[in-house]
Length: 295
Image (cartoon, rainbow, N blue to C red; front, side, top):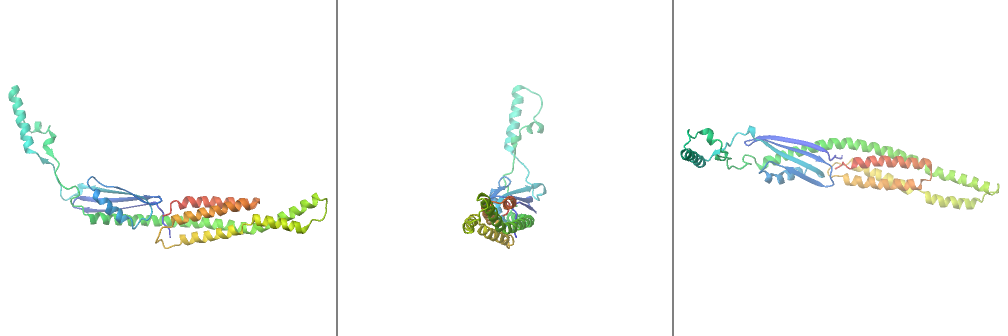
């Protein structure tokens, strides 16, 4: 079982401070990389969030956003009035009235023009939010994200399996065609020598040496054996229990298969084998693109 690095999950709970919600999004990345956003004053919760997410996400870029809706809070903290400052403003207004001999009395409307007489309460912004609650939310959101990554991984695995089947079919063609091309080349070479030598009998021993030399140069049996071995290792990784990430291993195997395909193409010296090698590399390119998103 493999997992995709693309996933999403969330969790939310009510507490005395309001409704707490954690949303997690993941995309592909070479390592476990996190970006955590929290409300102002909630910095101390970042590490518990990351620690709770790590068991669920082995690799990928993780965006976690913690939000708090205080509209549902059971305890509301209203603004406090600075009475000393308000009295000072009233006294100043009365003095201004007396000095300038103006009519009227200072009233509430005038005092409300001075917003600094109201102060935000000096309270802990995180009051009512426990570390254990935030860690639980992160664990639940991480589990939901992991489930989505596993579902996407199952689809990736099916696609990769089909690509491997297509490659294996092409390898069968290559394996069957490879010896035939030598026989055909031998016959063409014999006929060419016969024509050039004006129908003189061909020296079969020398021709055999020439064909043996070409057979050694064009031999792709080792490449096919290694290629099939890489395919089996790739399938084993796809069928693993998911206890550890296999994305990097799959990436390495796809690179090695591409290397073998290049070698087979360079040794092909045959139109049919060349076309098969190109088809194999096309499938490998699709595999490489998919593997980039495997955890």
